[in-house]
Image (cartoon, rainbow, N blue to C red; front, side):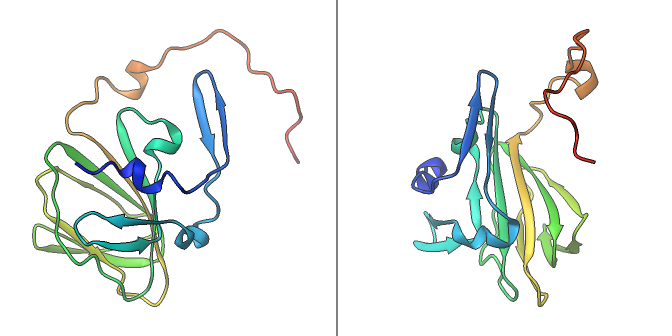
Length: 164
């Protein structure tokens, strides 16, 4: 099994860490082409994809930030053994093909795909396609956000004023 964290370890990202968090600055979406990795099956470098698991110390999901240039298509279908994926399109236009069904995607489109769904996508537009992919174990969520949340009686305070 390929360690995606190893593929992007050499790419330095500014971070701030605390006891219960890790925050990172990955740059502007337009600059995602600066990140690259070698796909283990394609045996070539691909640009415009940044895996966040290792950078943020994620323990139950993989997240990637993506930029697909105009006219580029993912050259293979894939499915997963255990993980569902959520694609969140944040800019540009393109298409996804899932189990032979083609859907148009653009900013504001979100697509959940079950592990066994065969997927591929392309940018068939003249502009860059931007999207976030979140991958997590299928059927692993225990409780809703509101059920899992723990309220605090502590008042919210800020050491600086909000910018007007």
